[in-house]
Image (cartoon, rainbow, N blue to C red; front, side, top):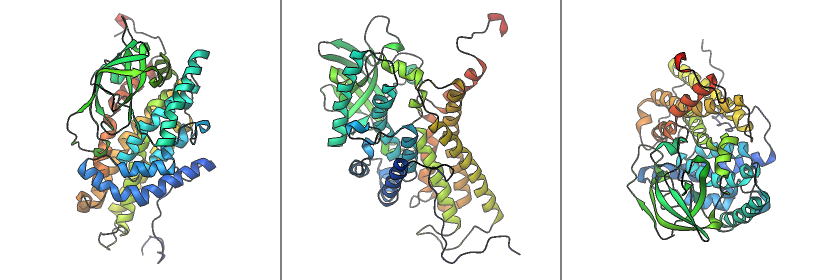
Length: 427
């Protein structure tokens, strides 16, 4: 006798909300998730294969997100945005990630520019003069996004210790009348040649400069001295178009300073969740791999065989393993999203590192099980699973918190309190 539940002739698998059904969502969260889901299912998913195949930026997706208001999701309400908090944004980003990982990942680069200058900056200590200048500067940037649909990138990596937070950025900004002269480069610069403005991290050029002298500046892509180089033909996340950026004697007006001098360093110490905005994309990919596998085994994926495979114990066990990993990942994702705040406790900081690592690694593990369970069909580029698998592998490589750096920091900070050192003879 079969132990399977009775089958309804009209039933189909309905993928759940990325936030699950465990807590009540705010009205704003429901609205934004509904917008992201509608765009994802009807616009982004049908375009994802072509974006991946050709390694091109998803321009049409961005036009849709501008029209739907998603580019201004973290712009404060007084400037015409949604004013979404951290938890609301990462849930929305994860929902987009279910349908097109490259769109969700590049959106993160754009939204971070509004998040860092928005509610994160609001929580930082500034002088009255700094606060006044910051308000004037960010109002200009927000107008570009809200009224004109301008896209901001956030090139970070330079190929050295600075990208891991171990040294000052090699890209330098020399102070001059009316602004700065910037020289340097960025590698793996997502949206290179595509974004309207590059929000770059650099170091104020002065004797003895340290990480405390980091600057966050917006550079117009058409400014003299800005060039893009290199091909882009990677394993995954192909639509991010992460080529190399070069800055040679680029003049940057003072109004393009996205944070007051010294504020970026303060933010890194007091708002660690600012670096955990890549992982929501991979939460979405994990959910998408699970959704595909369930639908495939139920013979509900368009264009595939009508033969059900769900009755085999090996398939049921595999899906159970995927569900366990997925719910573990979701629980940590939501808990830490809601814990985001200025000056979190040590335990919240440790949990954040553990969560970031877990999402990145579990997304790929879930995709691995999905590929094995769905069999030969999973290799076909006409279906999304092979793309999800490739995209998922890229997560643990992304700075500033790669999987290795998360584990390194987590182990050290679990065992040492601030300022502790071992005596030489303790080893």
